[in-house]
Image 1: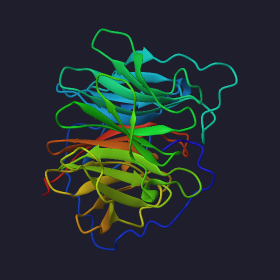
Image 2 (image 1 turned 90 degrees about the horizontal axis):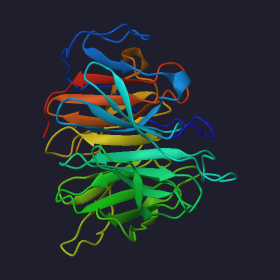
Image 3 (image 1 turned 180 degrees about the horizontal axis):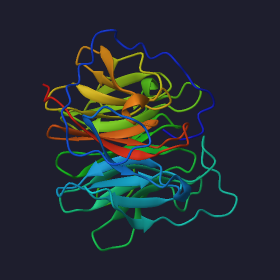
Image 4 (image 1 turned 90 degrees about the vertical axis):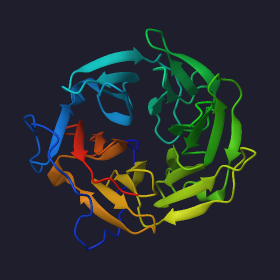
Length: 324
């Protein structure tokens, strides 16, 4: 979720039951700005003065994480030891360009293919740069598909066959589909459930069990849109509500349980298949306006952009109990 939220919306009705996310230590905790539980590990404290505010995250086989830094136009790798290496810096937009809803250039979702190719989203308010970008190992970034400069491409997902990319546009309330080879995007879904309600609508997106799952920040919902046998969008199902300020999310296993980043409210929620949810991480654990999550095995990684705290953007790791 970007920094320029017009007001801090409340409405997350956290369950009063005990936290349902079981955690165990993942390693030694580095020196921390916050004082998290001993079972939460800081992977990295990032440089706020250098604009290192992580917006989205994807994981690499060797244990590193690749993140987008929303406002300094950079893609970076964070090693398991917390070392940050900038992989690419995107070009500045033309003078006078204004990114919809945010005004400034915005780097959003990022995904990784098995061959190490990275795909990511860049929004600038200019038609020459806004769209889906690709970075091959050892290469330089270039745009492979133009998206409307009037939109805000935010969340990005890659299908299981690695043939198509799905883009959640927060301003246009649209899910776009783009071939991995690039080319003209298709308006895959423009369902009203994707629309904004004052600021940003469709935000995070994942492909899971033959469906596109999408969060809506303004409406506080998690949506499931089946992918039909013909590849088109099926009927939208609302799978969770009352998660206002939800940014990105990640599934904890093969089932439909997921973890959701509740950005402005500074929480991570565990959302069960029936839509009920429980707060499992707060600022007391070290998160600072969490923007995105990724899960590998029994470890969840939480990226925090510190958009409102303006203190300690970071990457945390926490061990999760496998869930169906």
